Image 1 (cartoon, one colour):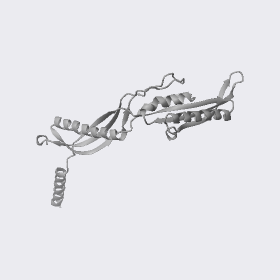
Image 2 (cartoon, rainbow, N blue to C red):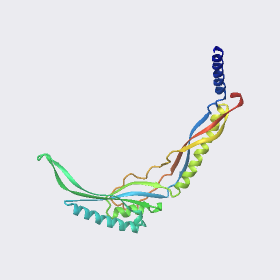
Image 3 (cartoon, rainbow, N blue to C red):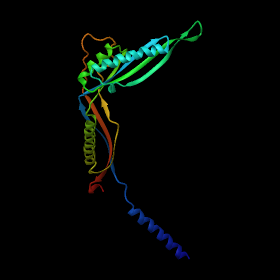
Image 4 (cartoon, helix red, strand yellow):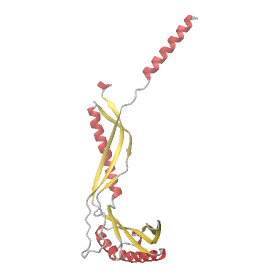
Length: 239
């Protein structure tokens, strides 16, 4: 009986030892984050136009704002901006309350109707003409101007390819410095592209300028960042 117990224990020990020697080692990896950048001169722009009216009644405020809307839209047609490129962004009619200290309560003073339009200009050379048309037609505010490129998707793909190429290059440098070489790509992910560039103006004066408005946007950057994982192949001396 003792002989059988010793034999079984010895067999179990040998089996565990063999399994441990044949288990695969964890694969070494290199993780790299890199960016690609492409610069572009904008060829399109958009800006906001706000039309606003105050009146004793909601109906009067809405009617006055509607008249401003018709005048501004007509003016934008003369500036080569079609109706589909000047859609409504928001519309509100709201009461105006004012606190009366003597009565200890808020009093209704009237109503404000506010109509916001987002104007898209697909030919950058016409941006000044479109702004002037809106202001001269009675726009109460011309808000932030932003610029973009009609080649955005094409340029984004170029920046993405550059980012992956930079990740491969940096990974190779890291692998060589660690005494090995870069192996095949395991996985790669991309973050939301950044489209940087400062608007030409944040807010425009509400008085029509005697000279035509001129806009000169700066060059903008499209930046794409990727995070990648690569297999690290160690040199024979390191194994």
